[in-house]
Image (cartoon, rainbow over the protein chains, first blue to last red):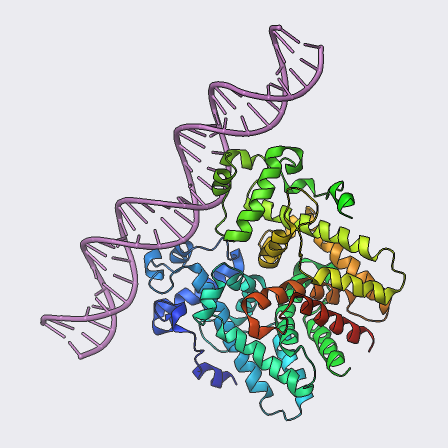
Length: 224
Length: 224
DNA sequence: TAAGTTACGATAGTAATACTATTATATTTG
DNA sequence: CAAATATAATAGTATTACTATCGTAACTTA
């Protein structure tokens, strides 16, 4: 798995960046260090100027890769969803039984990332934390419709529809497969956030609890 | 109901504002016009300077009511949750049967606000739209823990725990009442957002569909 | 009714943000 | 080695997110 992952490149919509950050050392440093900085200081406090100082490069050079920090966030979250989709497909592909397949899928999308696996310059543990804290901000904007049209969110949408399809395979007569799929994905991020900041609003204490909660929710709903 | 609402004041934590906007005509205008502006231009583009121009007042005067626009957002969302809690309690108080009570609660928190009811200077329809688009931004910040400690989110938390308690009353052995309650509240906002911007990720087309989806989800889960 | 208090508006100013433009200097590639 | 390209350095702009000061209007109380 590790070796395989090393040779895979997550394909990100070209409209999200000005110049592909994977195409140069500087680009990779931008992505690498921005993950560290955003996870530490939060997206609001993060600026290209600070990033430039941190990587010993110039603010204006960063603008040659990303138009603004919003697009960098869309890039990072897209990368995450692409990476997660890869994990999902890899782990569920060989499972024939549809219920078992869905259970495995839920496990993968609701767990938190525990180890930094393979891609040299991307720390997936921190990126997972960024997604929990900042993912909503990538689409809760006034530009969401135009950016959606440009394909900024295809990877996220593909994740949801994959899970939606798995739900349909388990119970073809369930009328809310898309809603349930999007609830799992977004709800899982939310439960992890609550676990860290609003303990009274969730029953999830350990990381596996979110998996247990959604597994139970989906199983009982589809087997009713 | 309308008359009753007119005489009720939603109690907001005093730490959220510098000066109570309910205490003066200018304060009310700030709240009133900020709702119109944020719902129209989005929270990111909204500034106190623009608001000042719009209400024919000075930027510095607005700072006498709210320290910054983030606190104004916390104020607006708190007001919304307080208002919704009022609706919830009012509508469910007299229901004895716990399942019926929970069903009514779900209906109230998952529907969108259709009419501007009673509070003169607050447009609840637009405020509901703001909550759908911006609510997450009020807590997805680096300051969430300190603000939580100061009680900024009590009204939101009270809503979740009320619903959590209703879930417990229906099925005391269900182990995820808090998580399910928070999923309903946050998930409902998300489904409405998807309905407006990512149609393929939800089965909700009309406003009532979100109610139907969550009603079905909760009922089957708790009756398993 | 005079004096005190508070509220608000007007103006000015600051530091930081979010860029854009230009030019110089490396580095790569053909 | 020349040409093309990438990056760094510097400068500059408009806007944001404030803070501070001051004058005056309005309301309050003695």
